[in-house]
Image (cartoon, rainbow, N blue to C red; front, side, top):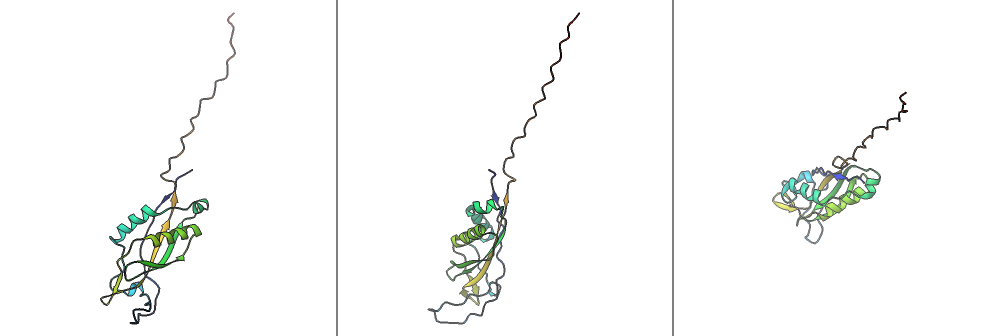
Length: 162
């Protein structure tokens, strides 16, 4: 069986518009702020390189997706809370049910992020993370070439010497 290698290409991109935050009582849940509206964007601890390393060490290519040869980019939307935890993950652009589930599992399992800041106040922020799944066999050893055995030479008729 050929091995599947997964490459994950990641980037956090702009979120959809969300209503402005209203200074409500602490008991009520505040509406998350648009990713592009914050002064300091939420970030994975250690930056994008650290996020790549974490994702590559934790990602698994589901067998169901391999059977269907599914590849592509799954985009997950989530909220980075004030304490840096990730909540409300959902797939906004899916590829295959098994890949979508794996992307949600990865985002849910991520360590706490550095939260977003707006006007010197830590805020809940909507973020997106596109995760690319690509299966390739370029590192799979190729089967050994069959060596052709030379065809047996036809038997010669023996000549008698007379």
